[in-house]
Image (cartoon, rainbow, N blue to C red; front, side):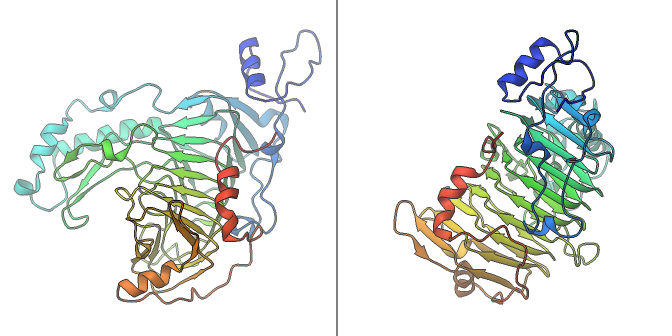
Length: 438
């Protein structure tokens, strides 16, 4: 099938697409530029019964796109233009796309912003534990807005974003806001960093820095499939950030967050690694749009040396099965599954590989929740024996109050339940980018 793109491809572009594994269609005439065929996986839809994303109208993304709405993108602006609107479309990412386009934090800074002056002005010892206000905070907010205009990219409904070989989106935040029917597959997301995190002096006992951008944010989005992607901070790791106002200068938020009444989502075969706040499902403890929503399935994902939120859940019925928790860095690990307000997590046949210094009772954390089901978990320390464990029982034995051991529902939408013993091999082999055929 010929693909309509916005401009004729140059010979160099065609050569690059051939190298990326995209079939090149025959020319209709000697004067017609060659155009690539769409990989079969870029037209795939979420199979019936494959998690919550298959509920309702199902998730088909841009599979119905005509030739004129298949785009090959290599730059930030090409990506932003291609994913806009609700017409069915397939967007093939064919390069590393730097959402910041080479800009550094200094390029976004407002003329009146100065970090050292900010730190001096709002030091708790002098400013107190109240939210920053005044000219320096206003300048920080203007600076943050400057960066946000560049790195935020709004994705329209009925869209498939598919990465060709070695496709990567660096520093960008794809926003799925009040849209439906979106598929994102085979894309490596890296380092969605915030140059101007906000200081929140009442967050926790001593305050915290809070950043703004996720690699992918679902906000009021329905019927979404995130599949075979990779998420990481890359070379810009949190452990290398400075300490300001007594707290780590946190420049990253989530990898893939699902918030504000989002619903019917399947997250499958992704590789999430070396990131702290990995996946937040539900952003507030206040009942509202999230009640009865946030139905999400997570299966066959690899959570490797992440800090926390794998996932952290509020309100939703969230099915967490056949995931591989690779928790060997005890210095960065906080917890895996966060049980939040009115959440109903059902966890089954997951596998945990852990450091001996990471206790089993740390894998579940109570964020104000009251119930959870866990079945069939296996774990091992290093190369030691594989043993059956129950992470919820371990938590309840160590902490009060207990979390009830019945989530109150049983998942019905699953793409087959694999034995937990097979999870490390299956997930290592198949999760992440570069694993899809065709």
